[in-house]
Length: 184
Figure 1 (cartoon, rainbow, N blue to C red):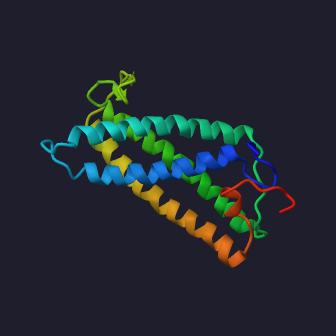
Figure 2 (figure 1 turned 90 degrees about the vertical axis):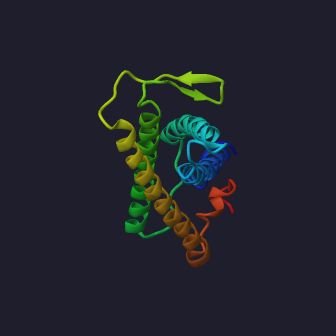
Figure 3 (figure 1 turned 45 degrees about the horizontal axis):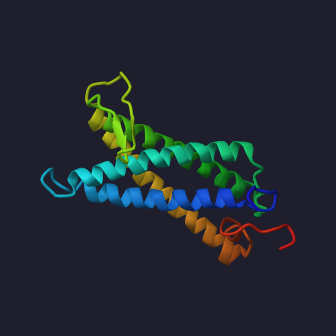
């Protein structure tokens, strides 16, 4: 089952979810590591280039996920509490907005000097002809705090999934691990 159904997420949505989750935590860890490096550390440039390349690849996958979500059937919430369902929906939207802010801020950091961003030495993403005073520093602060906020939301998201699984004993978590049919 590749596509979503009213009862379950499809394989594409599941793969996108877990790929993005792993990438977010990986980029966050790499980001924390690389800001502690000095210019003379052997992996200073390599970690920065890797972070940018993965970040821009992530941006493309994120855009695809938004499009996929927009044009796909969304499974119905399993919880019966309408307020909690609305809170969960709002939290997902907030996480998407934070992800967009992180991507844009990262781009603004990387292009503040007017140079394109090289992606895995395969192609370049050009800088836009727009800068402002202190762009790299301001965008860096936004990037960092938005990333920390996103990690907080991701932890709450995971705790909510575990609550569904162990306390509510519904299939909210299971249907994000593997496609299930309505009969299960």
